[in-house]
Length: 142
Image (cartoon, rainbow, N blue to C red; front, side, top):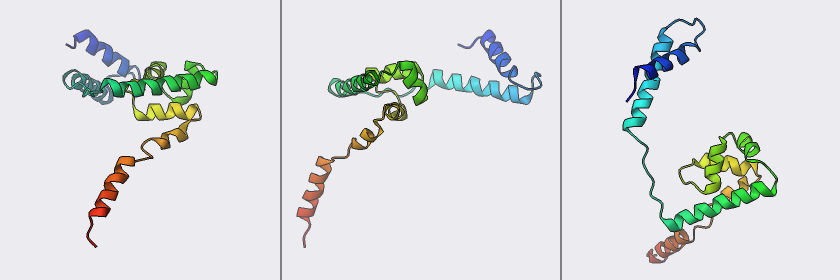
């Protein structure tokens, strides 16, 4: 679990940020907040999202397309990550098609590559929705 040395190091790192460099209420509440957040992450892990292999292949292809677009523009991973405001490891996960990366990280990466308008193409052609709507319209009695 959480050791005393970990709590002390948390305390010191927070207190070093204080202007007075004394243990104030600010330090105490900040330390408690970090401790509660760590405990929450330990006991309440994030929900795992199930992705079927055929759907994972779609994300894999998206990641590969993003990687190819970056390479065509001769951008490094560092350049794209900095411009998108994400970590380089997040960009690596995007290019691998990781489904747990946030949608905004994908969008910002596409924005850096000048492909942000492609985002509007997602779910733009709702063929199934139109068919269902047409069925409802046909079944309405005049």
